Image (cartoon, rainbow, N blue to C red; front, side, top):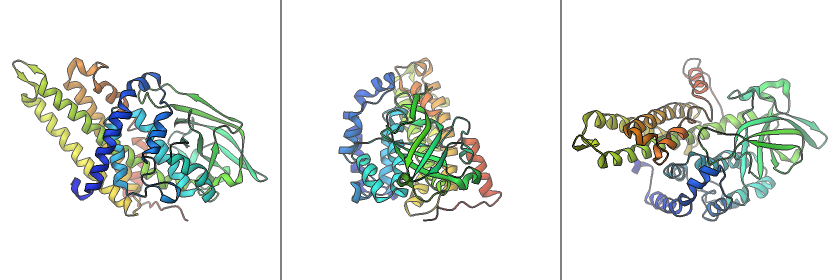
Length: 389
């Protein structure tokens, strides 16, 4: 299955990126996990190597490569066993930067996309609100037109890179009476007066900064509106498909890493005179996990291929995230159990994998929300369409 999507060039990229992570990132992971802060220098190193520009236009410094390079980027990030570090990288690259690239004007792209690709600026995407959760249409943050500017008031929460980013891509209601049809997207600099952030303490993803952000009469130039006014909900829905696929890929890659580690442990640990990989009950658990991972990985690849060809994959992406993250949680649980007491020790990787994996069914749309979206598609025959250009 892999050879159907990955060329020799893809595999060379994988090996190069794996070597880069081993040399430049892995030595710092435990420190960043403990401190809850990723040092700024690594962003620049990623930028210098072109890793933030994989799918972006060459005009702005990108490489213009296909989405299977992104798959490799995501899979290899999971192998270093820090969901927080991985999230900080992909939230910048595929959440904030996606909106800048798709909805931003040429001037906005020159100001924000190019330095983002080079690792000189860090972005964050601000959608979720303290009282809204997955209810995007119910957001309360407003952006009211005031001459040649907008005044933004409200708050966002659970924002990855929300504390240390240089700019924010923010969803707000320009017409509060229009529901989802009144949402628009803005870009604003971190140092704009009226923006404040506070860091949140999390169960997992410890290396990344996750923040609650408040907007108090933030004055944003009208030129910072991205795309058409009132079209924000369509933009968000369109790009959420990519976010959900990202989390599905993260899930299958994290599961693969957990299972690989566990199988290696089983060949070294002995009990009752034989290694653990010789006990039938454990062998069958491994076989079941390997089968589930392979099935979901294959579906994720098929869905990425459809997206790469321009298909609108809201249904498939929702299904991919729903099931892949469920399996990842189960694999983390079972693999930790198979290490016994050592699985519960922080010295071994399963404890962190177990914590980090739990965000999978929550972030980017909870499993409950995704289930309802899928039900609307398959039962009510609801159709989701791309945002009008």
